[in-house]
Amino acid sequence: MSAVRLWNFLCSLKLAIVLASAAVALLVVGSLYMPSRPSLFGAMDRMPLGQWYAQAWSQQPEAVWWVPAMGILIILLGINTLCCTLDWLFRLKSRWRKTGEYLLHLGFVLALAGYVWGSFDGFRNEGMRIAVGQTVAIPSFPGHYLMLEDVEIFRRTPRAIPDAASTMVLLRGDTQISRYQIRTNDPLIHGSLVVVPLSFSQAAAGIRAQISGVGAVDLLPGAVFALDGGATLTIHDFYPWAMRRPDGSVFPRGENPVRPALELELNNPDRLIWRGWYFPQDGLPPELAEAGVRLRPVDLVYRPIGLFTVNSDPGAPLALAGGIAMTAGVFICLFSFYSKRARGDRPEIT
Amino acid sequence: MTTTLIGVCFAAYIVSALLYIVHLKVRRPAWRRGAFILVVGAFALQTAILGWRWWAAGFLPVTNLFATQFFFSWALAATYLYFELRYRIGGVGLFVIFLNLLLLASVLPRDPALPPLIPALDTPLFTLHVSFSFFGYAFFAMAFSLGTLYLVQRRLSHPLLPTLPQLRKLNEESIFLGFVFFTLCMLAGMLWAYVAWGYWFSWNIKGVWSFLIWLFYAGMCHAKFVRQWQGTGYAVLSVAGFFLVLFTYLGIGLLMSSNHPLE
Ligand code: HEM
Image 1 (cartoon, rainbow over the protein chains, first blue to last red):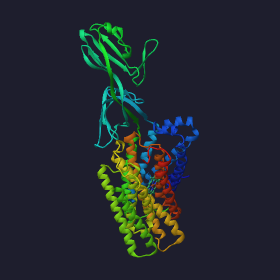
Image 2: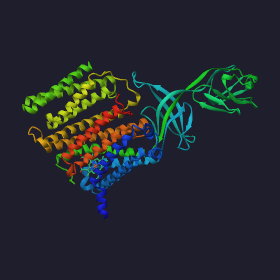
Image 3: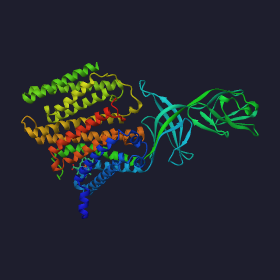
Image 4: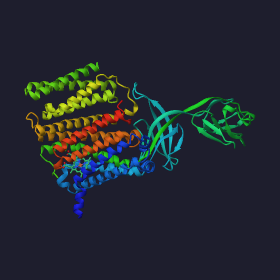
């Protein structure tokens, strides 16, 4: 096949129709597998396509064979469209009236390229739990952290269902690189990264207690209290449901406040008196009582906790550029359709 | 009140459809003018109802089955009027009026109460996504109507129906406009998905079928340039395409669970 014939084949409108028809037929067949295997296909949105496919193929190859076949057809259609668009660009002088059509074509190619890129790169984390005041590392994104500063419940109109506005800080190491109040349909977007709110609840975060000489206080991780006589009480950690191993070490069992425990440290100005786990249900550890600490737990302290989707799709900006090109193209097309019609201009028929 | 007014629209559309049918037999301009005035009147009333509900709710109400069917019916009437005003299609677009009647009939027994807006739907992207999709569907319905008539006319060569080249031209325009609206619907939907879920294409069955429909009609926008597909082929594709649309709108919503339930 000569180069010219190959190029003409790649630019051919008939090839586009054949590819699009084949893709439509394959999608009809493929989509029939979807409703009967919700757990397999339901996971498709939870990870980049490439990652999903690697898992799905190893589990149920008979139900997912059509996905790569589909991918190949659509990519071929994309190459076909790209060649067609380039061909138009080479002859722009005589074909400028088709700018709308070709912006639409270019937009499709860009969006497709963005999708392919995002299918093999980037990551998705659905349902990251972050409590107010907590900083968590973003999995698959080394060196980056999210800190939830605040959650505020509000209504857009008096009759509307309540929504939450969460102030989220994105950190690279210790440096803040973005801070945004996230709401439904208004995520934090930074480069390829997007943070979307999913839902909100409450989680036990510490214990409210009465300490003699101090008063009623919230014992939350990170808090330090000065006691009578110069001692300090530091709260290191809190587990809503703590378990003790036979060797005495303590580990978290779950989020339900079944058996809460605080990791405390008591210091005199010059030395450590005691550090260990305090289970309110078991009473005050003797070391603390002997040191004169009078502490009476009153209640649990709850904190808002948010569930967030944190995804990175490096192809998204390219897809957005494609979307903008398509939007512009479709409007120009709309006008040029009628003006071309009025001029009796119909393209060469193949 | 809303139900009564919708009942009035329904009655006006029925009478106008009957007048158009009579006019196909008895070519008196008065029948046709009467039918046209009734459609315009019913459409104006429907527009007023939609406008009033929009104002009362504070958002375009397209968030439950009642509201979407009412909007779809309004979009069908608008599509019909566009073709009627521009090309005087008259009874040729009767299928669209019938579809409109069917939708209104299923709306009438339902509760018209305005639902509170859930935050996820409180965005212009959602409003654009839904309204563009129904306009796309309405033009695809019109293309179905024109395609069917094309096939009928090919056998009958009836002098009272438009000629084959006229029908073909109208059908091509309807497909093109449907594709334009549907493309805008997909674009708004993708942007919305990104800000709502953090990814812009969802592999749920409705998303897959919407892409499939889009690809199908994109193919049709090209098929008209290929000689073998012009005319009959195009008419058959318009009919087939509308079945894909019906399956996507009704079949998936009713038969399977997706993130696009009807209610
Ligand atoms: C999925 C990808 C594609 C989409 C969505 C698309 C969409 C469209 C649309 C909406 C039109 C305007 C039709 C009209 O005027 O009614 C069009 C026209 C056209 N497309 Fe595509 N197209 C695609 C792929 C391709 C490919 C691969 C080719 C290459 C052969 C191609 C070649 C053309 C040509 C030659 C025209 C006619 C322009 C004119 O002269 O009016 N398209 N396309």
